[in-house]
Amino acid sequence: MKSVMSGAQSASYAMMQINPDVVSSFPITPQTDIMKEYAIYVRDKKVDTEFLLMESEHSALSALVGASSSGARAMTATSSAGLAYMFEILGVASGHRLPIVMNIVNRALSGPINIHCDHSDSMACRDSGWIQLYCEDAQEVYDQTLIGLRLAEKMSIPAMIMQDGFICSHCLQNLEVLPDKIAKKFIGDFKPKYSLLDFKKCVTAGPLQLQDYYFETKKQLSLEMKNVFSEYEKISKKYFSLAKRKYSIIEEYKSKDAEFIIVALSSVCGLIKDCVDELRGKGINAGLLRIKMFRPFPYSAVSKALKNAKKIVVLDRSESFGADAPLACEIKNSVPEKIVNGCIYGLGGRDILKSNVMDLFNSMIKNKKIERFINSR
Image (cartoon, rainbow, N blue to C red; front, side, top):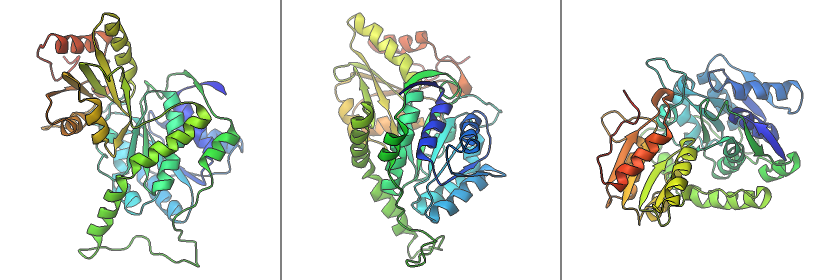
């Protein structure tokens, strides 16, 4: 079924088809539209979700920890400082292996105060034990929300679904959605691994673990994260059979024979694809490697995808002050034998232009110095 939606609306629409038992909310720009749209579904009785408007983001995620621990299918959404305020509870959710799904509308962290897009919010949470999926456009937000929910519930690991603030969340796009019955069949019934309300199989939630067992709990999560890749591929194949849209942990856009490759996340990849097409038309072997799953990080797939590249530039929309930026760091770990140039772009919503991307490719082609900061004053 074809429709026109923004990224925020597509996230809400997927949530409506999922019809989670509990959704908790606290407004923050530019995420607010996701929860606003979902509140309308609740008002119009298109879902029977228990919709909780909390007094803070910390409380919003805390409520979902309680709901999910009790066997409920639980979802929320946030941005920026809201995600930062949730930080204490992120580890609680992953440590308890609760399959909560959270849509993140990426926005810069303060200070100074900024309401526009960069990835400093979700990148600050990359080691919190959550699966992280980054979307290029509204179609992917819809698809990855459905896929991400099945993945989280299968693995008993919470998941974040990222989209770029305003660039994706507030821009309209033609997209296709599954009929409700097919979407619900794909999602299936939630079968929690445990529930505090199951009095025939009593469990303890929120235990104190000191030197005796904390290490082992984190080891279990670490080992299970390695199984996310294969499970994601299985779920994606099932989704392809229904939607005819293929998903994988990385996207190789004309990069298999490319000598000059840019690696990036999210919405900027559409611009890079246009540049790659133009350069290919001139006989230049340019390509894009898009990372869709950032946590766990697909080192093996990335290493294979970049093995023939002569020049590699990595674009990060966040900075790691005093160190390599997050994506650049992981790419360097994936191909330690190659020279990888990391570039910072788009902080606080600063535009990246076609000319900026073409300059990067031309610098690679002509073996010129590549500046670390793109389109900065």
